[in-house]
Length: 163
View (cartoon, rainbow, N blue to C red):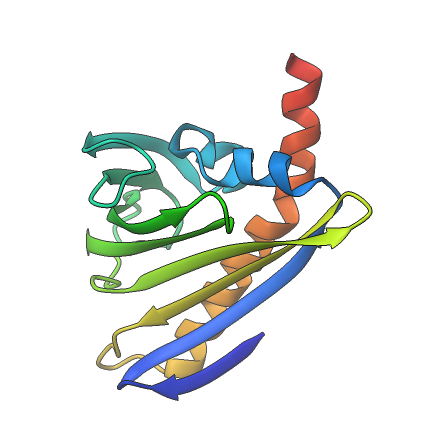
């Protein structure tokens, strides 16, 4: 995982190869309703406003993405900043949450890696959090996002068996 500092924010990125064509990967990762299929910590995705795939679209994710001291589910309200299906990219900003990541930005980019494989690149920037070690936050987010990338292939396979 890569980590770097700029703009006063904490930055990190992870990537991985998915053994599936870019079109199938994009269909999986770009649809809000499909998030629980490849992000197992997300139990529910609720559309809050706007049109999916159009900047300004907002959604609420809930589940056990981040451990809470009270045992409650994590929740994150995200707003779509940009989505470009032709370049297989999107950017979401975390507008509000109960996990301290308000203002964080996540970017996902897919690249055709040849022979029906896809390179998935996930980068993120986090506002510094008081009393928390930067490396711990960047490493934890990297671990979560890498585990999600690793789940995409099996989610695509499971979805194709349902059809």
